[in-house]
Image 1 (tube, rainbow, N blue to C red):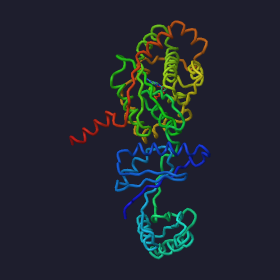
Image 2: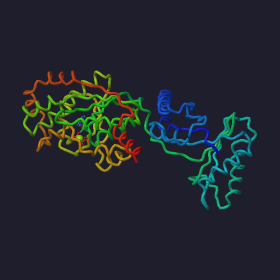
Image 3: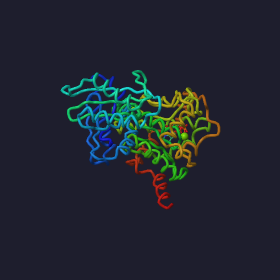
Image 4: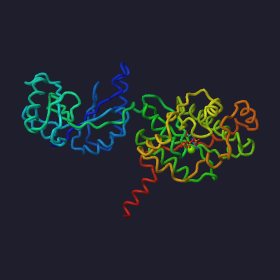
Amino acid sequence: MQVTEIMLRYGELSTKGKNKKYFIKKLLNNVKNKLKPFKQLEVKSNRDRMYITLNGEEADLVMEELKDVFGIQSFSPVVKVEKSLEEAKKAVVSLIGRHYEKGMSFKINTRRSDHEFEYDTNDLNRLLGKTVAEAYEDSVVQMKNPDITARVEIRHNGIYISVDTILGLGGLPVGTAGKGMLMLSGGIDSPVAGYLALKRGMTIEAVHFHSPPYTSPQALQKAKDLTSKLARYAGPIQFIEVPFTEIQEAIKKEIPDSYSMTVTRRMMLRLTDEIRKRRDSLAIANGESLGQVASQTLESMLAINEVTSTPILRPLISMDKNEIIDIAKQIDTFELAVQPFEDCCTVFAPVKPKTKPKLDKVKELEKALDIEQLVQNALDGLKIDHITTHDNTSDQQDNLFESLL
Ligand code: ATP
Ligand code: MG
C-alpha cells in the first residue's frame, strides 16, 4: 500500500485567531520552499491542515525535509483508497498490522467531509473497529490513549487513512515574527540561540566579527559553516562579516586589561545595532547564558547593554551548558563548534576580565577611543555573503571523503 499524501497539523497556530491566515500562508510558503526539489508535489492548505499530494515522489524523503520546518506540530503519511467500505477495511487492517503487537489497544477515528457517503462516522468507527478486532484477536478497543489510532477520512474523491503520527519541530513559521540580527561567533552557544530564535518565527541575519590576521580564515569559514547548518531551518541566511582588527588593536592599546572585555562587547553591540538599522531589522539575538562567563553576569550585561535600547533576545539565558550542548548536537552544530579555530574574543581575551564592571568607569575609559570613527571604518568594510545549506565546507569534505572510500 503506497503513501499518496502527507497531512500536516499546525499546532500553536490554531490559537492565532484573526492572524491565523497570515501564519498559515507563511507556513505554506516555507513548506513549498523546503520541498522545491520535489517537482511533482502539490501542496495545499486550509484552516486546519495542510496536505501534500506526493504524485509519485518518495514519502520518506519528503518527510525528512518536513522535520526541519518550524510551525508544524506533527504530520502523518496517508494512504488513499477507493470509496468503498471493503477497501477501507483492507487498508485499515494492513496499516495497523505494521505496528501491531499482541495485546495492543487501538481506536478508529473517522471524519467525514463527504456527507453523501452511505455510512456515517459512528457506523464507520464501529464497522472498521469490528474488522480490526477480528483480524487481531488479542487486540482491545480503547478510546483513551490507545497504542494505535487509525484516522479515516471520507472525502469526495476517496478514503484517506493514516496510522503514523510523526512529531514536527513545533514553534512558529520562520518569517512570522520579523527580522533580527544574530551575533554569531564560532562557539557552541550562538548557533543554538539562532535556532531558538528561528523557532519562535524570527528571520535571522548573522553578524560575525573577525580580526585577521589574529584570527584565521578557518575561523571565518567555521562561522559560515555554522550559518549553513542553520539555513536548514531558515532558508538562505545573509552572513555579515565585520572587520574588527582595528577596534581590537585600539582597545588593547588604550583600555586597561580588566575593562577590555566590557569595552569590546560594547563595540560589538554598537556595530551590530548600526547594521541592524541598515538592514531593517527589529532586534538582536545572542548566545549569552546568565553567569556562564565574565561578560554574562548581570553587572556586565548592564554595562554592555547600555549602548542601545534595541531589544536584545537571549534565548539561552536560563539554560545550563549541558542543555545547550544537547540542542547543538541535535542541530548538528556541536562538532563544528568545538573545532579549535579561535574567534576574535578568544584571541584578545584578557587574563582577568572584570565580572562586575562599573558603567561610569567604562564610559570614562572609552573616552580614549574615537568610537565614531572606529565604528565607521568597520561599517565601511562590511562583507555580505549569501549562505545556503550547500555552503558547508565540512559537509563537502565529508562527501569527498565518502566518495574516496
Ligand atoms: P558562543 O558559544 O556563542 O561563542 P560563549 O559562551 O563563548 O558563546 P562569548 O564568547 O562570551 O560566550 O560570547 C557571547 C555572545 O557574544 C556569543 O554567544 C555571541 O552571540 C556574541 N559573540 C561573541 N563573539 C562573537 C563574534 N566573534 N562574532 C559575533 N558575535 C560574537
Ligand atoms: Mg565564544
